[in-house]
Length: 165
Image 1: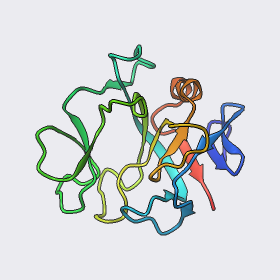
Image 2 (image 1 turned 180 degrees about the horizontal axis):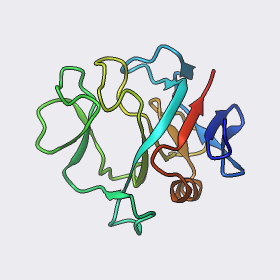
Image 3 (image 1 turned 135 degrees about the horizontal axis):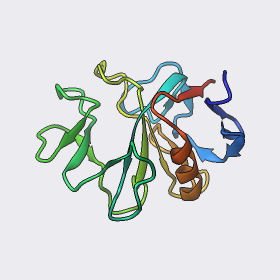
Image 4 (image 1 turned 180 degrees about the vertical axis):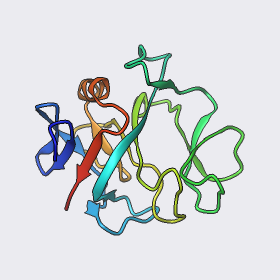
């Protein structure tokens, strides 16, 4: 591990000399991730992108990309574009990146099962805002809004996210 790594521990995420409380998947942490299990995958992942809602916040970093009204994420194992950013209209199962609630106002994308996804191994693992403290996710890692913004401003493409059992 290096000082620039994000390290998920039982006490939260360590990054940049700080520790942040966070929520993980309702299925806990697993070494055997599959679509729909609600678990956060163990392993060494890398930050692969940063998305934000320009109608709700200023661009957090120069490398952040805006989320628009047609932006989706494919989570359908039958989709040739499974676990990829896609746009409306889209004929396969997907999740809207532009939500009514604030959960996806800011998203750090990881390289979990990406960019060449194995169908069924689980779609996107994001770092995003939580619903409320400790409320579990579907496998992502979630934070308080101000903590997520702090993390996003200091992370860079390739920053390692270390998740262990």
